[in-house]
Length: 520
Image (cartoon, rainbow, N blue to C red; front, side):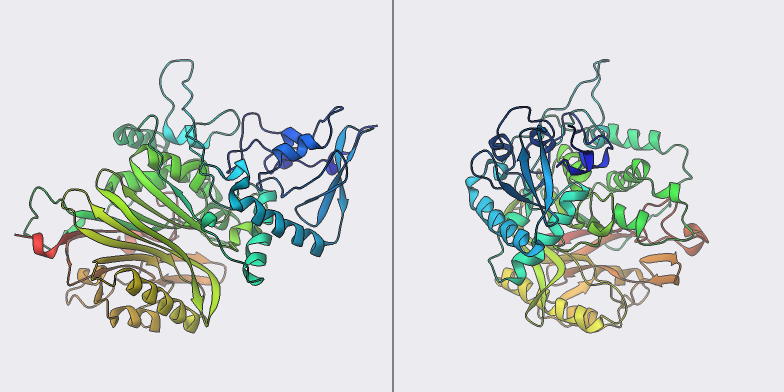
């Protein structure tokens, strides 16, 4: 007798298909085959077959002994082996028991005993029949078939619907019970790309895909310094951008003036990549990244970037049915220009409690000049009424930055602070002992006023125009050479952002720095 499809344990991606079939050739974020491979059709094989392949938490946290019994999986269910039916059957079990077992098995797996947590080498790109290489974007985001996407095996985060809910359940449970947080939550990838991507070819591909879209916003640079650094120390270009998480933009943020088609990921990703490729930053700081594994990590790795991603432990993206995993902060830097000395990824603290907001702090050495600098990216709590909360998060971040840069290391901090210049957290950064200044104040005539906006959107609750995004820098160590100007209200248009010609509700900020003591 056939087991109904609704009782079959399937992989996250396979769960979307009515017949429960796995997408051929796909692997979860830990590099293990999807659980569907082991569960849907056992034939006469014992349940141990499931156990051998179920180390991956992306499908379910599973333990079993012998060839039968009840196995804990996600969502407060368990599965057992029915030899007569030749399939694993889901049973309801107490959610509390399931959570305890999941927590135990998670910590056991993170101890390093599971092959699911071992790094795997990047996969080679597949050459099409015509002999020419697929573009990096198409390769990284193709649905079905084998895609040449480097996979990092050091993070508890997911790429599909079922595992996303598992992630959101496990992350707060581990923290709330006082058990140690491990570095495995951080995804830091330093793979050398097998086949580097030509940025000019990728930019042409972006232009080809976007040829039917209206012209993009035209933004020029404002030059502030006439002096130039010596040839052996090029300026450092930094790009800060909240790119708008795809799950939030499509399903939660309710941009009532933005056509749904403008948010289609198949084209919006090219708009984002085009913006990055146009400016070619040496350091790239992003927020609301929920397509890290299938887009930004593989594509930017091919362009020569080292990448680090730290997801929010309870990302709002996980509430969306067909999400792509949790969103978080990501920090990229060019390998040819910098080498990594130290990296710290942390959850921000408010009143001694860990919050849902995160930050990445990295110490880099400039290869050309051997100078050391520190770069940080963060995304503070959103919404009005949380001003005090953001202030506490800012205090915690400043304290962490002081600890890292204690020896006087120059500092650059990028982020969506969700705070106007009138808020306490902004004032804390201006008055900090780190001697920080906001780069975009230099666009104003007096050099003391922030731009009128860095985000402009229309939701069902009304129109929102605010300055929330900043690039802070050590003014005793860096000089700002030039800044990317912000568009005018007329350029943005009456429907505001996002739109067909701009992919996010936040504007990118681009700043070029030089070390003060190396200027002519």
